[in-house]
Length: 347
Length: 279
Image (tube, rainbow over all chains, first blue to last red; front, side, top):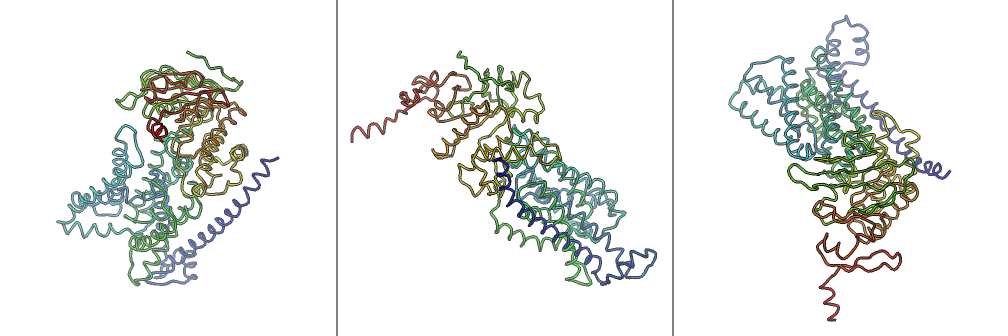
């Protein structure tokens, strides 16, 4: 049958591309595993593999090495979760906005969380990590709703361009307000500056636990949005013609993106560049299919964040450079390289 | 009003605009229009820029809900039907769809299968066959693995039509499918659509600019003027000097196409006539 031989000839190059992707995936998984091991082993005190095994095998033992390991495990887990959440969130936002530059920072969500934190420090006097988490979560979510509302004004409903502009405008307004509150008040600045530099060093399981269900919902929504994003990528009219409820699909993917970015900001503070850079790297590896882009982002994001965290600990031993600073330092040149390698898609 | 005969197959679906008023916010584009799309036929909507052609096509494709009246698909109001169900009956190729960066032709065409897939479902054999068939009839099978940004304009437009074919709908609406293509590609696309209509009985409605192409490739033509139906009928009935003057506000001569006996329009280009006469 003609159509059968046809599909055979097409499948050939597909298979070789699939093999390449599979090999790369295995390499990336191995790299992530290695980074996690290094993340537990490195720090102001370097522990051996034997000590790591020992610390897990005998949880009752309390020596310095075992304690260090038990602190570094939740830190590593947090880096994995936040890395995956930020990367998937960025990929969703880029899909919703059909804009390759969309990410939680550019769309104003981090500014919203920061503004909420500053208000809570300056006017309410909140001070514990658990309180900051709730405030950051609420700030991010409220900002997301405002961006949606402003982006939907006008006769044609929400459009990618209006959305992006709304995010940028609301973000810069909130940043200005944050500066206005913090600049005259050194007491607020001294507390806020620790939150402002995103990092995973404060990772503790009991702090993460209450946020995890929300993050899990975010990942589930992301997975369910993938096919709709594939249709949206063809333009709103094409997507509607293919049977996608465009506004609902956009709202759903946006909700998932907001849940993921707000929860990771609540857990680790604002960490830039992961949401922006990782989806582009994923696209280079797997192509234009959002099902694969999201999955690959969930693998590369943790790798970037865990590796950055290890680098931050190694370069300035015995101190830490927080991961938010390292991702920006690594992310900027990587992003420039990505842009140079391939022309950016149109907005 | 002229009755266009239909070519009804037992599975054919009907599409009918019933006294629709189309408006964006406060601006009314079409006041009151009814149109029974002849089943199994090819039709064109023509008219000057801004007359409401694309708006009408959007309403027929359920993308714009009429302010009053309704578009009926098989007798049911199209805006109340599940949109995915509509997408298995009626396909739309908008004027400027977006090709995601780096997507291959095969992957682009595969997205036409969206209405048939479950939320998390994977590609079935029926999906594979539909995509392979669409690639074959559009002559793109050999280019299937090529990124769309590396092929010619005509091949790209064929890929979009292949996507619509993979959607396997009985009705296909196209908004200016030949715009931006050179003359060879324009003919190629129109021939492809004619073959589709002849082979599968697909009902086709397209917005066209070129009156001579509309005359040659369609069974019926609707000429809109300021959002109202100005002329409707077979090409021979609609294409006339009076219609061109009326609808497009320009002079033209209509001669008889020696091949088909259909009307053929020659725009009245006064300046070039004057120049050639004096030379």
